[in-house]
Each structure stands twice: as C-alpha cells, then as structure tokens.
Length: 90
Image (tube, rainbow, N blue to C red; front, side, top):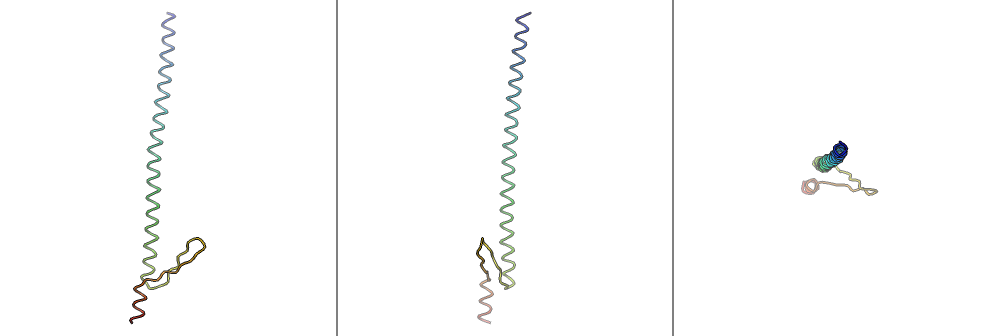
C-alpha cells in the first residue's frame, strides 16, 4: 500500500508538470500566431495609408492646383508637369 501511494503521488506530479508544460506551449503558440496576425494588420494599414496619401496628392495635382507637402520642418510645393506644359503652350 505504501508503494502504491508513492507511485500515485509521483504520477500526479508528472501529470501536473506535463499539463503545465502543455499549457505554456499552447499559450506561446497562440501568442506567436496572434503577433504574426497583428504585425500583418499593421503592415496592411501602413501600406493602405501610404497609398491613400499618394492618391490624394495625385488627385489634387490633377486640378492644376499647387499641392503643399510638408516633411518635418520643410515644405515643398508640388505642381503637375502637364499643367505647366498646358500653361506654356496655350
């Protein structure tokens, strides 16, 4: 009976340790998958914002209006070359 009780305790400890290891590995796997998804969403949002900004600049310049672009403490003015050509030839 004494050996059976000791073996039972050892088996319970082994099962508890293995369960803890499985839970930790599952949590790590879920975290890794989530972080991969999260980074992909951030990259998509960055690229989408970048594209929308470029399209907005292009649309504004098509009206032959001056488009101010600000980068840090510098300001640049963009003009569509086709507008300049139209003004010099016509």
